[in-house]
Image 1: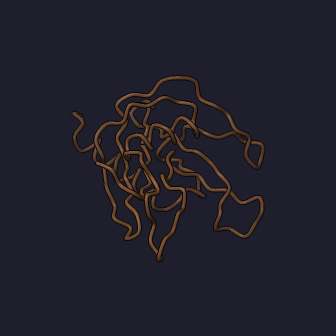
Image 2: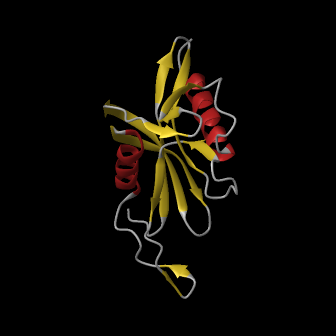
Length: 154
């Protein structure tokens, strides 16, 4: 399935005792006026070079959402991933958003410096997510973890 304009991201979890940790990336915020402002998010990104014709995005991407996920995950985290099923698909009107389950993750994590002397990406316990995490990504993580816990044997 080819989509001309989409965002694809993945939810990578690691078992942390009886809970989970989620992999997040940190990048400068394009919507915040402060130069040093940054936000945490799930790894992922857009597939579009921004060509607009008559107010519409056209012919901007030849990747499938899965290909976008693999490329963006590698660029942002250093990890190679094998995408699983789509956990959720959202229609944002001018583009689609795909949140994938991860079937596999391997390789070496990169460490990019970010403001405050920290590094990105980072694994965070799901009960200690950073305050400056995009709210839509926070909700997606919560929804995903709840779905896993509901289907896991006790």
